[in-house]
Image (cartoon, rainbow, N blue to C red):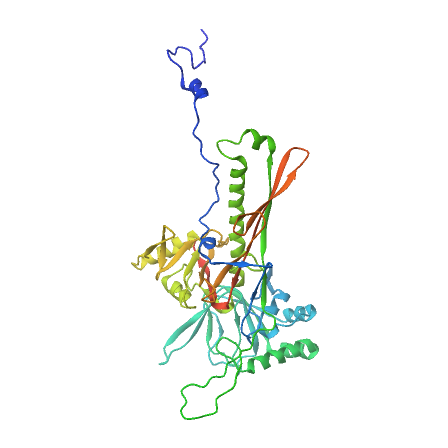
Length: 459
């Protein structure tokens, strides 16, 4: 006998499947993966920018340029990208691509094994410049009583050069396998003889170095202090940069499309347009935070000043590394790291018997180090080799720190710095809205933020 598959057969009362046809369904708002706390957007102070441009005026500095060279690798051959040599102070105003190409061709590759000594303290050298293309080196010297001391670590993009007397001021020893590119002084002088533009740039750089300047490379302000009697006081003035940096607002945009039949007939109890717009704005804000951290033009991570870049000395982020990062600037108020980096730091603390403290920030409990919030951000990339970075920030205009930039008084503004414009209804009855978020980020002075690089999180 054939068995019936009807779930209602044999019942003595109404089944739940049929009863649901008369019931009111309780529903959630549309959910979305990928929404993060976006701590950077929440914690940065924001400056309203009119005219779409923010100009950062600073004192004149003789330490021109401040970027890092980049490198290309073909097989086992490593070469510096010629255009990025203009990021180095000796070649800062050099724009002739042919000269930069010839200059890049004179760098000689040298591969290092762990323990190899690249430079010895006090030794004379024929090298004009040395670029670290890959790997890590320790800078070592002697203490006051002749005991060995570690002066720091060098990593990819860092530059070494002998002192004014052509002698190395420290010992550079490889702690990992690596590659460096060296430029001999004789080769640089030969190129300068062939190319007047290069010779003129080097003369200009040497002249700038000889000018009176303070420890930060800024044009010195003459001041007399501690004098007695009636000595003649020095005259001075504060010089400004002639061509200050100007930061244009960037934009993240999309066109949101909603069929009129959907918004007319299926608009309750939740607004179709409202929910579509809410999730679209979430995606734009995620893209905004990613760009503020990683955009090569204005993002924080690619534009850290070389003196504010530190290397994790032994791989995982240790309390010593974090202390070094905090003390590189005054009033460090925020730390940002990938969640995996925070976990790696927690493991290092556990091995030392340390327990990082917590505090409440905007109603949420967060980890801290030395009282500074350590905030998670998955927008800080983790490389395929398992390395990442930890970012330290001093925020605020008053403290010459880092500020977010956005426009004020946008037409059709939906949120600060974000507007929604109605674009019309096409012949398919689809309504279109242009959703735009305008933003950027600026550092008032170079030491407003810094980074701990090559943090190993995969061990």
